[in-house]
Length: 192
Image (cartoon, rainbow, N blue to C red; front, side, top):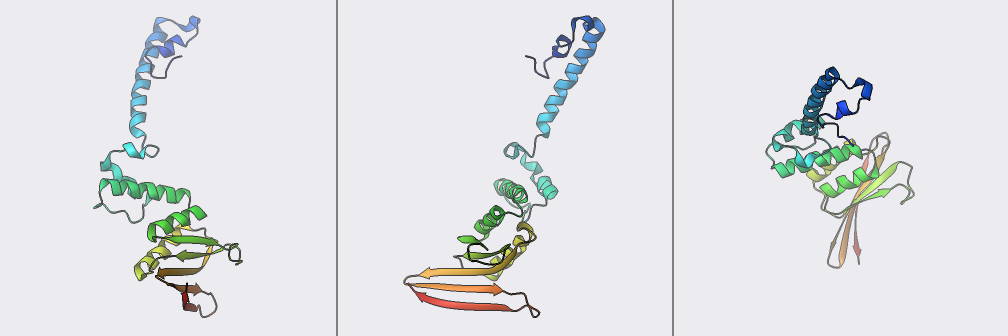
């Protein structure tokens, strides 16, 4: 079995009636070009082998795929992780897995609750986070959620719960869309 870059393999694959000096010279030149092409093809393998890419190309790659929250000041390891995360989020965009990954990045503990788990309207969902909701993390989550979730999906609520000793503090924000687009907030203290 011959490999594509073996010198002389093209000539030996010709039928005997075509094996003459002219064809041998032509096949030799073709084999040399195929050898160069194979070496060039190895250097072009980028997206399928990110771990072996030269770090000087990370900025260009991030620009090509529009990696969110990528900064040139980060370390090479952080840059590579952001590029991989961006590729994975584009791959799973519009699915539950993409929203789950986003939740795990932004909040320490969070859970995606589908509409069928709380008997809601189809294509709606809720998010339950066991973290302190700050304005920054909530705004970051909402901006990224628009890019990651399916276009037809609607977030009904973002709930936060925190346990301290014998008490569980629960807070929630319910977004309702009416003519006045009101936002209802409720806080409940429950003794465990």
